[in-house]
Amino acid sequence: MAIPLRLKSCAVLMTLLPAIATAAGWRGDQHSGALQFTATQAGAKFSGHFGEFKVKFDFDAANPAKGVLDVAIATASADTADRERDELLHGRDFFWAEHFPQATYHAEGFKPDGKAWVAIGQLTLRGVTQPVTVRFELKPKQKRLGMKGGAALRRLEFGVGQGDWTETNWLADPVDVAFDLSLQPDTAAASP
Image 1 (tube, helix red, strand yellow):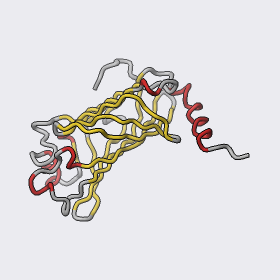
Image 2 (cartoon, rainbow, N blue to C red):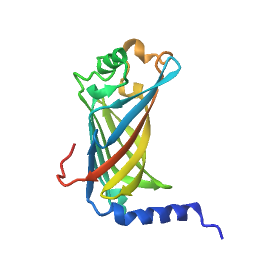
Image 3 (cartoon, one colour):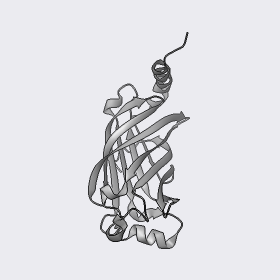
Image 4 (cartoon, rainbow, N blue to C red):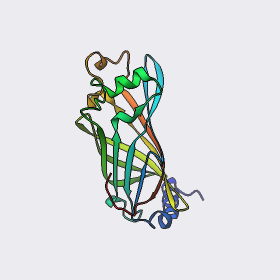
């Protein structure tokens, strides 16, 4: 007899409950893994990462609606391994890191989605706040919690790309964000 997919997903989530629920909260930063982005310039994909960020994740698998995810990102830490492009990204037309040194994401409550979880939160970037859906998977590993996922953004919704950069024939509007983290128990209970 075949077991419905929804029951299989619930069974997988139930096996994670004891390991995930052992810590009230989790935290991480750039030393815990990677926070990357991918965009398209002149028809070719390019990738970069943020070299400075903080993550605070409160999660109880028995009560995911009470979960909280907070991320703070230093916009000046964006790095694509291309000095000219990075200077442009940090400048006034894009992140304007001097004026908007931090991007933040805040989500409350998570919903199961197969083996993953979904958070619908608010991303504030360049002084603009928009809803963003983040999908992530959790994997307990010894005293840490693996958290892997991503989100799809449209840069122009946040004003990232001013002047000539509002045109999408040179730099496409969609940007994909991905993360792969190994979080540790949050003993300080401090927000990022």
